[in-house]
Image 1 (cartoon, rainbow, N blue to C red):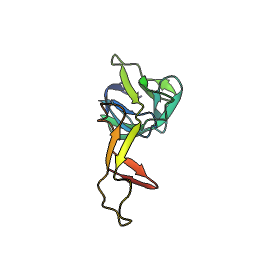
Image 2 (image 1 turned 90 degrees about the horizontal axis):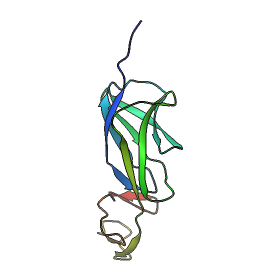
Image 3 (image 1 turned 180 degrees about the vertical axis):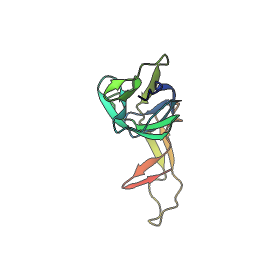
Image 4 (image 1 turned 60 degrees about the vertical axis):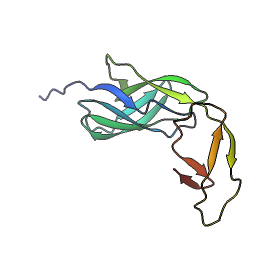
Amino acid sequence: MHVLNPIQPFSLSPTVGLCAGSTTLTISGTNFIATERLSCRFGERFVSPARLINSTHIECVTPRQQGPGLVPVEVMVDNNPVTTDSRLYFEYLDVTVASFVPSSGSIKGGTALTINFIQDDVDVVTHCRLGESIVE
């Protein structure tokens, strides 16, 4: 008989992202194992498959959220939450573009774009989708 040590998640990064979802989270902890049934639950409803990086890190992608707010994140194995002393939270932000300059550029690309947001603290935006292209 082989006894497994309990999985202990203790932190996640980043801790904030957009309501649109698709933020890749890295959850750090101990004793993560390879199983097809490893997942992350966001709040009470949304479950996202997890990808094992190694025994101390997994990745999950945040689902879309209806509005801004703090959501608990739990690591799940076989649809059961892993009990831990550390509570993990992810904050969803609703970001609105106020303006951008310039309004056009070369079809070849390479035009620098300045984006202004309605919100003051928007350090979480790391890329933008322009048509079918994602730029950083």
